[in-house]
Image 1 (cartoon, rainbow, N blue to C red):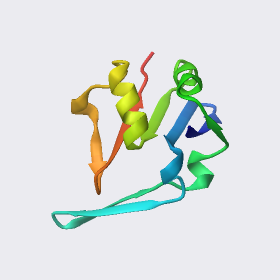
Image 2 (tube, rainbow, N blue to C red):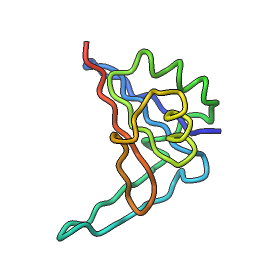
Image 3 (tube, one colour):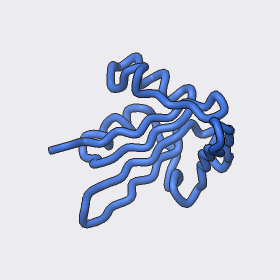
Length: 102
């Protein structure tokens, strides 16, 4: 299961999804002189727990997608939705941002 929330605005839809187990956690890492923080708040990442298929269906109408977690990223790689080169990591937690251009 995954946590999913869709944020709608006049500029489009932002899909935010993460592995259920990491919802509510914050991951930090120091890179050079900068502190990188990945905060998976319920406010941004949760409105429901859903299946992978639901996320895939919702991706079709998204303008931007924020996708986080080892399981979710692994499944998206298997389905060729993302490439390894697009994956970033914060404290060994993979995440991807996708921008869908018209």
